[in-house]
Structures are given as structure tokens and as C-alpha cells.
Length: 237
Length: 264
Image (spheres, chains in turn cyan, red):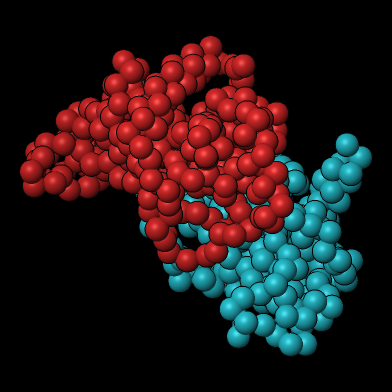
């Protein structure tokens, strides 16, 4: 964690004027990439992710195929211009790890056994990064999979929590992410009560950790509702 | 694409017709959005029909080239993201991505669009590097023209960050516009049989014999060309393609200036 003298919370308000439990403005859209089987664009404040889903489709080279099951190939990528100092193109170690944990966050909702030897490809591009990019990507992936019509046990909701200036907060922006005492990105299946992504770095008491998880599960219900509304909107148009 | 589909497209072209009802020398509907990426110093989104591309510009410190110690550096890169087309695969930029980036770059560079000498910070040591990054979001053909247009619009709307007291880049303070002196437009003319078409869709690109991408300045000067495709062109073909590109570049320029989306 980096150090700063700047206060993250002043008179109960965060840097962008939010209260500790407030989420940023959330925007969701599906069907944004005509070539893809399913697609979406999701913003939490200035963080924007665009996602394309292709599949289930044949998987090559063949040695990657699973004879009894389909697989997910998940690629999380940040655009070079999504951050302050231009990011070098190509996958960093960070992006490779996020691709893995995000894949595992959505895998439990798909019926991959029904599609042996195939792949469901999920391609994420972070167009603007201002904190909480992986959970934004997971919400977008959930919508894009549903938009593709891939059968799912549940939608997947992502939200980050954390602690700054001795206060537990939700939906960290970039600066809070950089200077927080702890951040906890999490994804869960709202109807199945299963947590599918849980990461944490920083310093928290066990009680604080448990409280953040409860706060995420509670506030995540709003995100779930937004996902459902977004999907319904497409089909009512 | 199936042979039957390809035959159908070719038969239509023989009758001067296209799948989407356009004339051979007609653009698809064009839409241009500026400053769409809050984290970039300049950006643009261009749509040509269903083709959609994004270009973002970042300004970083760089070292000048030894033979041009007081000139800033322009660098254009392209990634053909797998999200944009089912045939694109992940991995480092291959031949096609590199060619697209270099052709976009050439139009901007050779028109001397950017006054690079205004980008010198300390002669021989420190200059601004201007990174132009091209991302296709949905590929339905003619990425080079869409990318070139997005690149020049993004550059035209780029603002240089201020330097703070310690000489560090302060990206919250974007001030002077990047000195963009010329506005080149890339027009790719495709040839199939004895027909010439512009702004080909992805399916049309599959049946083209050859393409010639031609960058034209506002004075109607040709500043860059790139031939692609596996069939050779005669000198008459090239003459013809240049004439089409110059004529269509004027039309496109007017379309952009008037803020319109289509022309007949």
C-alpha cells in the first residue's frame, strides 16, 4: 500500500463526495458488439469495461479441448490509454492473474459439461481504469454471457470493498485503491449465496473483514437488480 | 464465408451493386465521437457502418532520435483484439496488426501533420512521445480507413499535459492542444475483376483481388500508399484508384466538416 498525507475521508465524505457505503454511478448496456454472440459495456464511475462473448464454439488447437467438458477462456486486458501513464501492450502479470480469478468467478454459473470440446471465450477490455476494474469486468462478463444466451444458474455480481481512514467503504475508486488500508474485490452469485471471487490485500481485523463481506453482499443486490433491468430492457425494445 | 456467398457478392459487383445497396463508390454511414476516453489525452471513436474503432492518445516523456534531437516522437500501435471478430485470436500483434498500425502512422507522419519540433522539452535529451493506440471494437471491414480517421481526430483533440514545478507530468491539467497542422484522410480502394469499390465490408474484403490505401491531404496531395492483396495492379488501375481516392477524400472531408453521416 502506498502512503499519502491526503485524507481519504473528510467530514464523513469521500474524495468524490460519496458516503462510505455509496456506489458510484453505474451504467450498463448489452449488445454493443454486433460480431459477438453476446456483449456488454459497464461503467462504475470512470471505470469502464467492454466485454465480448464468443461461443460455445469449437476449440483449437485441439490439445486444449476437454473431452468431457467445455472450457472458458477469459482474457482481461487493459487498453494502453486506460491509465495515466501509458500501459505497455500485451499481458502483464497482473492481467494474467485477473484473467484467471475472473474466469473462476464465472465458471460456476455455466453448464460446461453440456458443451464438451468447446470453449466459451470471454474477452474483456478495460477502456478506462479508475479502480475496481476486475469487479466491473465480472459484472460485464455476467451480462455478456446472458446476452449471448448461454444457459446460466445465476448472474454474477462483482463489487469491491475496503477500508480507508479507519472507515469501511464500498466500490473503491482509483485513488482509494492506491491508498487504502485494505481492499477486498469480491464476486458472488446472488440467488445461490455463493462467493466465487474473494481477494484481499491490506490490513483488517477479522471482524472488519467479515463486515466488509456482509456489506458487499448487501449492496451487491442493487447491482444484481441493475443487471436484470439491463437484460430486460434489451428484450423489451 | 461460403463459396456461394462469395459468388453472390461477385455477381452483384459485376452489376455495380452491393449487398447493402450502396453504390460502388459510396461510404457507409459514418459517425465520429471525440474525447470518449477520460483517461486519454485525446481520443476518438469512429463507426463506418458496423465497423467500430477506438483510438486513444497518450503523451509520455521520451528520448529524441539522434538525427532529430529537437523533435518529438510519434508512435502508432494496433492490437487486433479478439473481441472485435470471431477470427481474431489473442497474442502479440501479428503481420496484419503491424501493417495497419504502420499504414495509419505513415499517413499522419508523411503529411507532416504534427509539428514535432514543438514537442521538444530539452534538446537532445527529453521530448514528448505521442502514442497513438488503435483498438477495433467490431470489425466489419476497412479498419485502415476507420483507424486513420479515428487517429487524426484523436490527435486533433489531444491536449498536452502541463509539467509541475518538479517537471513531472500533471495529467489533471491538460492545456495546450497538440500542434496538428494537417488533416490527412485515408481512402482504401478495392479492386475485384474490373470493378473498383470503396469502404469494403468484411465480406467484400474476402473477395477483393487487391486494395490500395491512399492518404490524401487537404490540398489533394498524396502522402502515403500501401498496396495489399495478392493480385497485381496495372498502372491504369493505380491511376484510377488515385483519382477515386482524391475525389472521395474531398467528399469525406466535406462530410466531416458539415458534421453529416452519409452522402449519396
